[in-house]
Image 1 (tube, one colour):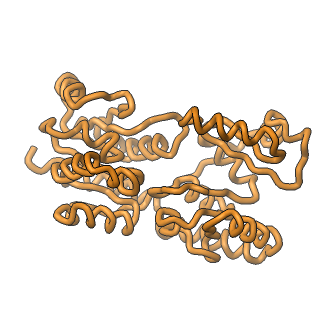
Image 2: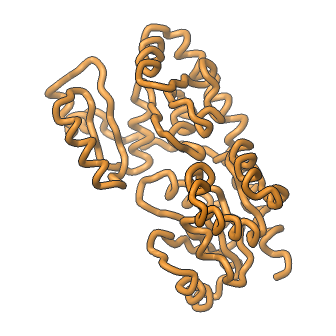
Image 3: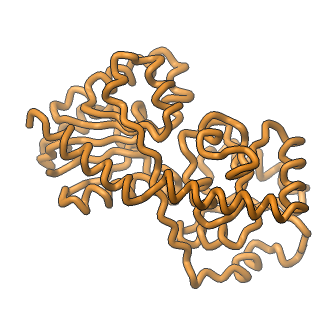
Amino acid sequence: MKILFLACLRANTGNSTTAERIRSHLEAAGHECELRDAAEVHSTLEVAKLICQGKFDAGLAIHMYKAGRFLLANRIPYGVIFGGTDINEDVKNEEKCRVMGAVLEDARFAVAFTSKMKEAAAKHWPQAISKIHIQPQGILTMPNVSFDFEAFLHNAEWHERKPSICLAIIGPMVDPVFTNEVKAKLRNIDGVHLIEEIPQADLQALIQRSFAVVNSSLSEGMSAAILEAMDLEVPVLARDIPGNAAIVCHKNTGLLFSNPQEFVKMAKRLMSEPNLKRKITNNAKNYIRTHHSWELERETYQNLVQICLTEGL
């Protein structure tokens, strides 16, 4: 089967990593899967021409609004994967919610990373609950063994400051206005460093050498960075929001905070209580092995495509 796969593919982001992983699952089953950046698509007509020219048999999309809407009315069976912001944020917009409802109604199946995401979707579109499958993200970390940690620190000019504690904010500068605001604030703050994205294997190597990974998102579907840190046996400090709380059990597989004061309190506990750190990392590693199997994720997507997308073809 030839599958058109739409997703937001900004390099070295969680969305692109997830999309590449799912594509590998489908190609391993013998399907031809063409991954296209939804951010570069402008209309359903454009996708209709692409489907006709490429002779695609089926479609798949991550994020119901940003990608799924382009598969509407294109006469090929398709499935959608909830991205997180579609369920958490876009539903607050009446027009986007209407469009996503149409996407979900037309889809052969939908995938939610957590039961909470499925429940949230069911509140808006109860008629679609039977087609929503829960499949947590599968994790397979492969940190770059040749990554030069000391050279990375030198390039970031940390060697000049040598603070006892420092925070590295690593990732693509998605919002230029917000990025400039952050840069302006950091000019007078030592120990906090804003660094552009680096390859996934290098990032995992850096996580592996870090004391902890912090997630301060206000909205999450399922953070791959948190799961990777847990798999690499690095403690996680995460904001207490539904997406994070679904995978981080406070004081068991990680630490949750609701405000800066709680963050500082939890971080100090982590630094001063080695037994707590050991307990969290051990439990988190076991959690990943039990609930975020890469092999099970592969099997799920292969089965969904094979069974659901081929019906009626």
